[in-house]
Figure 1: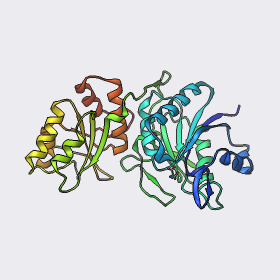
Figure 2: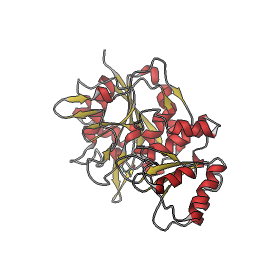
Figure 3: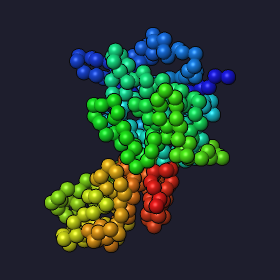
Figure 4: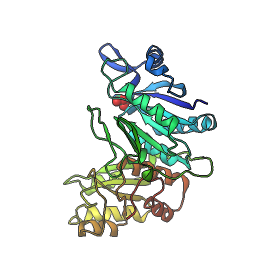
Length: 338
Ligand code: ASP
């Protein structure tokens, strides 16, 4: 029996058309191109259904409400399909893939985000390969994770970052090896894949995603600016620090502002600005000062994973101590526990 794959088409370059000299998503354009292309009718492909979202979005326009819509859509069709593809713009794909990883707890089937740098309508494009490979992976490989496929690699969704605005190799998973690599054959790194859960997935809605934020530290950032960012309604902040998680310890006002916020229950997570490596708040006094101010370590999480994880934890728990413990625990394979 042929496998069945559900495609949630949310928008992105993959299906865009040139209108007055600029790319934009146009309803049904992608489906028309696919219908006319024999590659998408190949006997080895699974049966697939395309569900086109309205409106189709250029992904900078995506909000957490769109993550909920995608997550609900997958849950509503979960039993009827063997795997799922989310066609999505590349700009915010790492955020959406991370969010879905936390929102869909106990996922037992592949959910593969993909898109392209060049639309399918162009002669030279990466859309066809990305979509066909995703269809085969979603149908034939029981990888029970939210993943992201791009340029011959399948990554864990909550480990990816967009690293190139114009190259085909647009995504990387700097702190975790790819789940699969496609060359002449398909090489799945089964040792890197999460185990199959024994019950159906649970959907967790994000109740107040607007109450978390992210701030990139820079030399000379004033305590006033930091204090403004930390005002209500903010309940959680990803602070992107230097190197192994360091920030200035020679500005008492800066540290006081941080300590005052954590004392009133704001969860502040220390993530590094570096692409690779991990936060270690015990390494330097500039890092341990942050731990003393009540910050917790984001270890080797990407800022995208940390932000969406914090929004998820603030939705499912009330107790700040539990949120802090869970934030530093490995929930979906998003951080490396040493
Ligand atoms: N701006 C587009 C988007 O994120 C870029 C892309 O899809 O590659 O929707």
